[in-house]
Image (cartoon, rainbow, N blue to C red):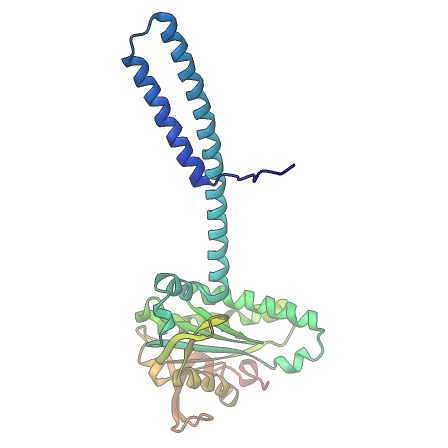
Length: 301
């Protein structure tokens, strides 16, 4: 014996059927009012309409419950995707992607503050740690450092083992340099406490630079990311590396200094040759950092 196709109506089909039944019930009620019926006939007709209407109410309640469940599931999934997207690319980049997805596909110029932070001596002290202990240290380190970064409006562009690239200026570009410098100063202020917590000789180097960057999507339609590239990024990385030679934990360029709005006590180190950069770069640090004992500020990696 053949079997019939069991077709479960879609939500749209069910809604259309429900509306048709509502119109039919209304038409029956109007016909009952228009017909010349005796009391028994009218009572019988009203009972039919009442039963039909009660059935419609049950169907409406069922569809409403289904709709609510689907809507709640949609919002749950949407919120979860929003959270994970922000967590993996950063809130500022997430907003750029959602605001104008087609725009981020094209390369455009943008002046930003770029910061590089690197753990000094990481290779040396990690030699005596198990892989699990190294991962635990990095999680603790990023938990300590990124809470400060986010508090000052920094965007984590990428992790590089024990190093990280930060961006300031996607939001509130007029205060980007001051926020970046305040962030660096606070990281160094809280570093001794973190060092004591983990029981390891943790030192960091911070390099800051400001300039024009190229921002846009690179990759394929299978895997892509919003890239921030250019000479500004290269110089910021070289400035961070120079903290080892200058024996200070934080350095920044003249281009970065020119963006500062607040009155900072600065110390000029003069024009310093940077690896891979053709012209010497004038570098600065905070006065109180220059006065510290070199061994307490930086160590070789």
